[in-house]
Image 1 (spheres, rainbow, N blue to C red):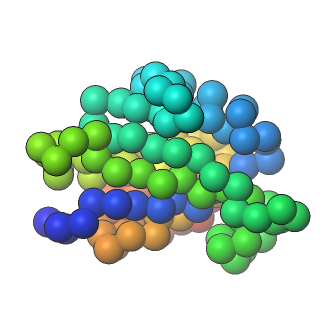
Image 2: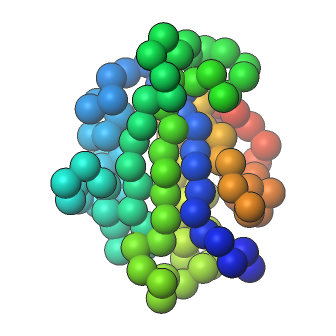
Amino acid sequence: MPEDLYCKIYVDAPIGKEALKQALLEISGGHLVALTVTTDIFELSVFRTRPGALGGLDDFLRWPYYLEIEPVSDGTDEEAYLSALASLIRALLAKGFGAVPSCGFEDQLHSRVGNRLRE
């Protein structure tokens, strides 16, 4: 299991930041605390990559959004956390968004989700 559970997920979604945050609230079943989507397992924040970032490209580093995700507490079960992230990625893909994890355990997430950028 990974020691550092921080994960960044690049997202290609043809919607505004607030609409993406709302979609993430619905997908995760979480609630909004300040600017953070919080669940029983993880906390995530949504960021724009940079002004003028383009969607629909194969280079995910140029996608318009990324999520920063961490366990909600130090005592969060790692297996539950990995499962929750894989479910989040699958749900984003099911909505037709691109979703690519970038973290020390991305291979584990890819094996749970499949090596796809999009559905």
